[in-house]
Image (cartoon, rainbow, N blue to C red; front, side, top):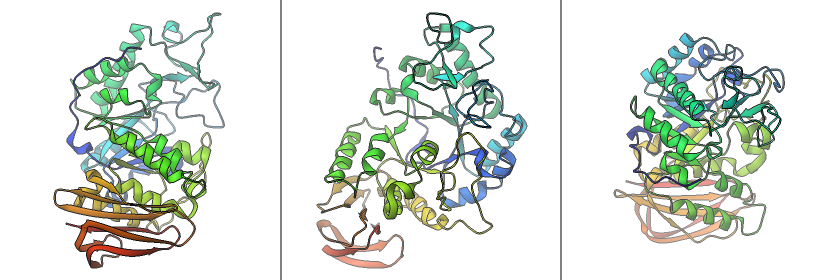
Length: 423
């Protein structure tokens, strides 16, 4: 496919470095409804989140359904509400309530495929991929879905019309696009061009193809996440992380990366952040909030949730009546990103370290930040020396201030994280 070069789309100002919270409606509450989740919005807002991302809210195909409830990502309609979650009026109330609190709402959009049964199939079979015998098919080995046929212009028009429906009817603020790289780039260009006539939206892509930043504001940092899982377990693994981050630094201005220690796929299929990172889970969370880009939290990480949530069946997150134990941990990080722009978008200088320790200085607009992260299960020693590490700094988590003179020594406990800020 030829890459179409176009001028950059206008980005919504509120999305720059904004934090995202992924919502699994099915598992969030006992009821698994919009109404029940809506009660959590004030707490999520108070924690410092900017954008609510709702996993697919469309009805699920009953044909080839997996488990008892099926996959969110196998829809039977692009313009209806999953009745398990409530009504269209309930969804509109959720969007309105979130926006009244100052939150933005984006929905998951699955453009590559539908469920094995979809309302378009009977009247428009040519809108779907078919094999030589005329059977609906797909190319990725997912046996509960059928690929759409992007060679069909009428299907493309209908799919964009469906996206427009959610903006017109519910005033959503953007889309998280599932497996965006499996969909032709020129489709996304047309989609965003048409939708921007209605409203300037935020676009998040589940992909790592840099060409797709011609359309998308933010793309997944999958390569970083895969490299980060090796740190502390393999020799030179931290260098692999730095190599990936260097690649990201070559992205065009305004192209953001989404950093996360968990999401719906990771939690269900590869394990919680505690299974993947062990004692370093919180240190990696600090990284996602202090490196240039956008941080993502998945439903329940603030508890912290330490179980894999079933993907195709009911498996409720185990909330308590108390404030989640990591609420203030994430609030500290999310609030600091707003107060200290250096955390979200500063120039970065990586400091020399040994073992599984990462240290970097950041500067922007007269602000300086020092971040030191021990990803190992061993006590580590680090000597920091840099001319910018000079003056009065405040420890982000303790609130205590210290005077530094260009150098200092840190003794890091296993999994320890340190953030110092100078305004």
